[in-house]
View 1 (spheres, rainbow, N blue to C red):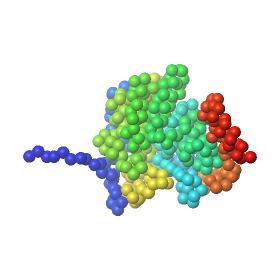
View 2: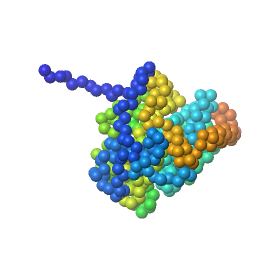
View 3: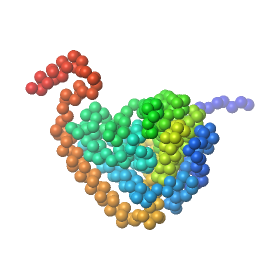
View 4: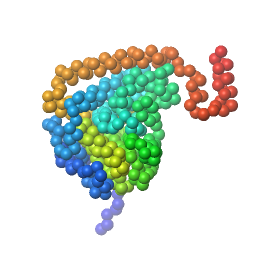
Length: 411
């Protein structure tokens, strides 16, 4: 008797009230995955798209061929950046709940993605972030006052009041404007990388998007161009298991890894523990070396977990188990790096608490400064004339007339 075909529905790790089950996550032992030469052909490293590169074991020891052997000072700087991102996020979340900013997106549990990757790149490399990459700005030294002013849309807002909160950019730090239209940054990054190669520059481009955005056409367009022209680009898929309220299995992550999609295009692809600072740094360094030596693009899947809701407009308790992150098998990126530094004798609980207090004070002081440039309810205000600028090289007559009329009404 023939069986009828049935529609398959991917199952999330748990619904509200259930115990989370993350057994679907394929995890390789720390130090077990081989590290090939940077000149290797993409077709010869298909295993990297299915294994999981890990350096830090459960005992916080760094092991295996991917160990980047970073200086303790670099590890301490990475820990500082991640802590600042987390404290900044927490303060801005509370600020939004108090009605002082309109919207926010946290990167809780994903701090190592932005910080470790940014530290592995060079200042001249162009970054095309998504909306959960505030760690890129912090790691490249942007004052958090500037980030706060963008959230407030005040007179110091880098976007001049034209963007949603968290849609930062920084020309000085080579960080492209964030787009609310998902996945657009991937082909933009490939195009920038192609232009850099044409000009004979040594810089590369890197971009980030989430697991859900891999279903967008721009993702596939970017991979096609990157593969055909061997663009010096790193394309990062942050697989944090959720696309707003939709489990990553609905984007295709259940059947094969997201990294495996790059292999199908002939792009070197690698899957890494996104909560392991050392592994993320090492894999990014490896991909960057490939790009700079003409070996082509790399697709990196960073396996992590989105601890908080998608944004302040989201209530994760409606679609997933409470405190599910406590069951996540890859732990917390900050706690893991902290434990590693303590194991090395380069950190302590007292130093950690002192750093937290220092960063808490920095965030509080920065907010006090940010509000002096204007808030949602109080001035000073942005000059309304700004709405007519940065669009046309030479302003057309109809806009000139509209601006004149607006100025007349203000007098």
